[in-house]
Image 1 (cartoon, rainbow, N blue to C red):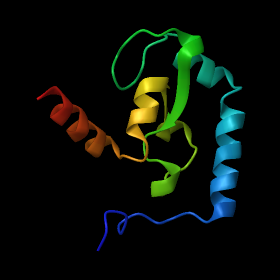
Image 2: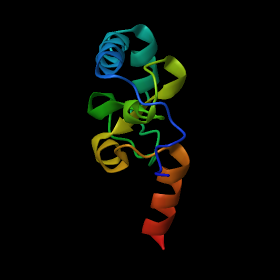
Image 3: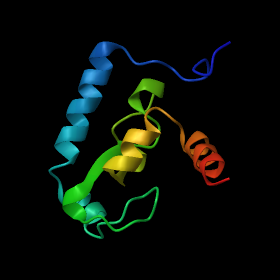
Length: 99
């Protein structure tokens, strides 16, 4: 059994739809408000609102959806490093990195 066994995989069409939903949410007042602090959800650094990207807490590749409760602002560095990790896996990764 691999690490993805507990997560439903989305079809290519579902992933395409979820990416489109995320693009649409990026243009909402809700997302602008989420980014207004300019702080990365993961590392807590101030990078400015214009330097934040949209990240799925549960990645699309792991069955996540583009819904408000699953989207957070992240700096590009954290978003690139997180890749398809789940929140607990990301936390474990960061803790290993600090030790």
